[in-house]
Length: 84
Image 1 (cartoon, rainbow, N blue to C red):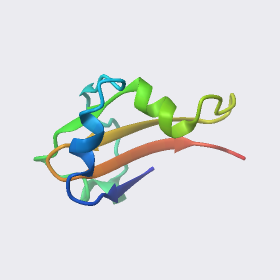
Image 2 (cartoon, rainbow, N blue to C red; image 1 turned 120 degrees about the horizontal axis):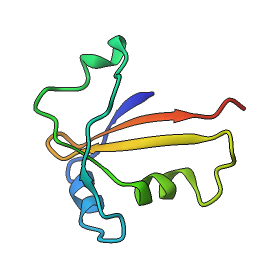
Image 3 (cartoon, helix red, strand yellow; image 1 turned 180 degrees about the vertical axis):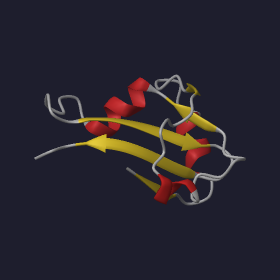
């Protein structure tokens, strides 16, 4: 899990791509050490198609993840698992 600050305008550019069909979504169970980086004014968007794009077409059965883009602050919150 983590949060990445993206260059200004990055999130808007990704959200404009209709192939991803983003919808409002909120990251769940954010760990305490990361909560200070998840601002209350964040407007999170997520997309299964974008998750697949970032994980790759065949991430394997052990790899999974969700990605959330903040339209208010150009942030990417990720919650991924890859035990190998």
